[in-house]
Image (cartoon, rainbow, N blue to C red):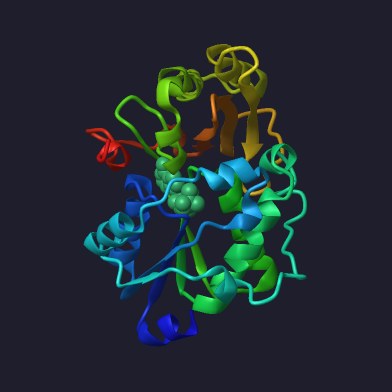
Amino acid sequence: MAEARARAAGVVGLVPTMGFLHEGHLSLMERSATECDQTMATLYVNPLQFDDPADLARYPADHDRDLALAEACGVDLMVVPGAEEMFPNPPLTWVTVEGIGERLEGEYRPGHMTGVATVVTRLLAGLQPHRAYFGRKDAQQLAVITRLVQDLGFPVDVVGCPLVREVDGLALSSRNVLLGECRAEALALSRGLMRAADRFDQGERSATVLEAAVRDAVPDGAMDYARLCEVSTMTRATVAGGETVLVAAARFGPVRIIDNVFLVADHHGASADRGIRLGRPSLIYGSE
Ligand code: AMP
């Protein structure tokens, strides 16, 4: 990583990923390439953030394809650190963002957010970017990273970028290729969130009502949570508006999906941010 950093000059942007790139990742890379002199992206499937070994074993990968896509999006340096380079010794130092990282995903995937925070800290220390780009798809992760950067004083701007969706609304995720015949069923989650966003646009502000709109769309037993939260703390909000996000997670066959809509209101008015929809099926289906 030190060698890669030494080759980058000017304002340096960083886009950390676990690979098997899709348009969500590419949107972060393009934004960094637009805003920074040089863009570094990392490809590292972080074992510390997998609570389920089976999930890690089946995580999709295609390095050659990733390198070509990243280059076409303006990435100057693709950093693919090995496990040895990331952690020459099994880490004894862990980064836990209390509260923010312990709720929601922290409850359902014990150790997950500490794994994310520890690896992102390692990447920020090793690559020292000026700006680091993360997707709002992972709203809780973004809150955790924003806070760890403040607490540890990393001189980096954390930039949150829009969630990218398939034509039919499914939030892009590398794991979506594993959905198989569960894909149609999995659409229930984004459909529920879109319904809640519509209700918000029509003036509904009650967390209970908005959360129920998501839950009602998802088959019994599939739902892990649907919760309205304050964006920066991920504590439950009872009323939508200000800076709130309706986050949800559910399980469909072998894949656990997380998705959200940002529900924001200020003196200019209220808006539900549903993300961006692609005009055609994602690249991840390209090789099928
Ligand atoms: P991952 O490879 O899944 O760890 O994601 C790497 C980065 O891409 C993270 O900042 C994610 O939030 C972001 N990302 C993943 N999926 C999407 C999406 N559908 N839209 C926008 N950003 C995304």
